[in-house]
Amino acid sequence: MSENHASPSAPAPAADAAAAPVPAQQGRRREPMFPDGPAPDPAGSHHERRIRSFQPRRSRVTTGQGEALRRLWPQWGLDIDGLSKLDLGELFGDPGLPVVLEIGFGMGEATAKMAAADPGTGILACDVHTPGQGNLLGLAERNGLDNIRVANGDAIILLREMLAPDSLAGLRVYFPDPWPKKRHHKRRLIQPEFLALAATRLAPGALLHCATDWEPYAEQMLEVLSAAPDFENTQADGGFAPRPEFRPLTRFEGQGLDKGHVVHDLLFRRKAH
Image 1 (cartoon, rainbow, N blue to C red):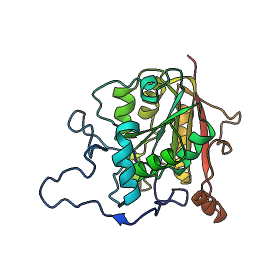
Image 2 (cartoon, rainbow, N blue to C red; image 1 turned 135 degrees about the vertical axis):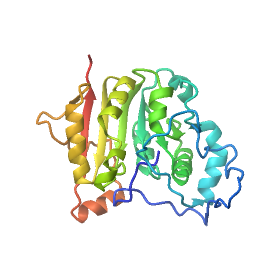
Image 3 (tube, one colour; image 1 turned 120 degrees about the vertical axis):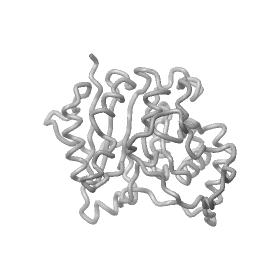
């Protein structure tokens, strides 16, 4: 799910080849651009329509990204259709592998770095941004990262319909769309209902890690997380956390910091009730 917003910390598209525009709809149904790749709306009419925290972005898929989608999606990609339960051990080929869910990975550069630094953890990376999906698949192949799987679609449906209770070793939400206008705050992902759902899928003691460079959203995240009965702040003072070493500092985030932007990390742990 493409949660990442247009901020200095969001990765920019890779210019690995000439960009090819996604075909526009012209009043008639077109064949999918990648027949064996990510579906345009994988859950379709199977699940309710509701206010979503993400907004699909129509942007160009480069030749390299498209090639990665065609070749690698059948092996490392999955559509969030909400019709079946996922066996994470089978998905990653290792029943004992701890798996972290990342919601909104942008172009996947930070995801690939985290996967390379921690090969003993699987990353189920969820987004709806087709260029980013192709970019991450290409990065995984080039760097020999077999601990990445790319999920296409709505993370809420993934959590609610397709993941087993206590199945996740962690949850990462980095630079989600802040929906800055007050009338759009209801679209923000980090809400009490989301946290209640996430808690059922996180194993006891699992880490929920959020990061944002939008200060009003950071304050709301801290308030909502602090009030969530299933989570406890890892910081003794009840505040924000220093950026942990496992979250890479991207070039774009560094540029933002140089300009005086402030990035807030929140590290909360699921309580072991």
